[in-house]
Length: 110
Image 1 (cartoon, rainbow, N blue to C red):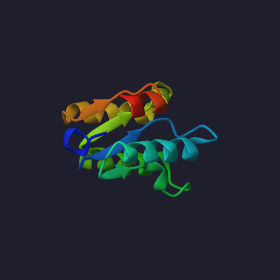
Image 2: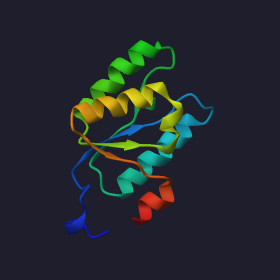
Image 3: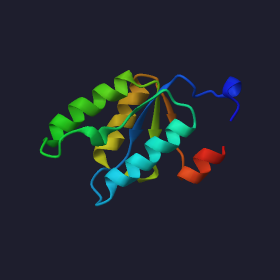
Image 4: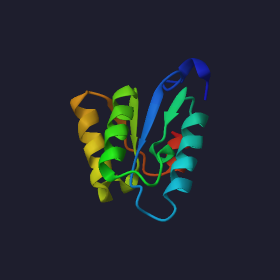
């Protein structure tokens, strides 16, 4: 992608999706890599938090990340996650831009 025409260059993205499946860390890491390839300056990945945290602790910190993101990338499995749905609702309240990619390949080829 031509850097001059890259609408994502310099932006901060937050990845929103389900983190309850067995391979969630791998999935989020793949999306983080794809977002970097698209030119995002900073990626906020909620899988960085300690596994011993409670749901409330996760959500408190995830919503803070949503607040600091320029754009939210809502993964296809968001529909299976109450937390991801809350993040997206909060992002809408803050009038954040939200992307709804269907797959990494589709996203990278847009």
